[in-house]
Length: 241
Image (cartoon, rainbow, N blue to C red; front, side):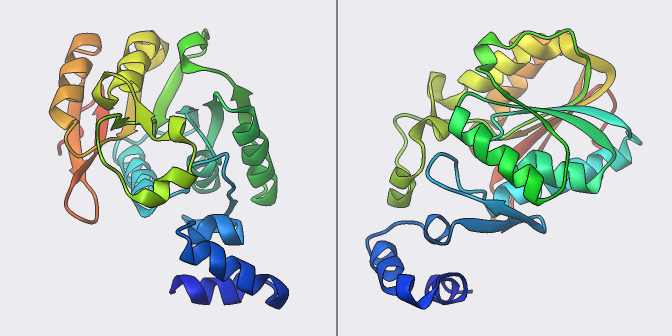
């Protein structure tokens, strides 16, 4: 559906003209109407969170398929950089699991809690920097769509409306992958799955990080709808079958 049609569908008539001006100025339509459909979940969005994208829906879809392939159920999941809560909510609605979800932004967590309530799911949300996260919990699944864009990379101008710390990351965009693997590899159960969304040039470098911290694990890089390398899946079991 075209952006103007979305405005007509979701905005009252008295707000349409203002919405159209904002749209013509380059503001993403999702922020103007205030919500997005994500994996058949209604997700409210505002400028405190990254707009959920089709690529991240595919991350959820592929993760669910791998969990079925690995015959994993009744899972304990950690979602890092949850933002609007879209990943956690979609997983919770589709598989049997308990989810802890982290984000450094308190306003993002407030919105994520609202989205969980709207979608009638129970998720444990925490305002926490991954640098400071310490837990004795053992997880079956760690999933993350972290900030992964290098600060030197050019991006779509519309992303200026989104929280920049949800887009860009140090170490050429690799910082959060390193931190997650370095800090949390001991918090994985023997049977586990890690699922990352990545920049399309990061796959082989992330493989090197995985080999450092989880040298016995299997790794597979998957492509998105546009045939770009976009996801890394890591497991103690062979997922290349």
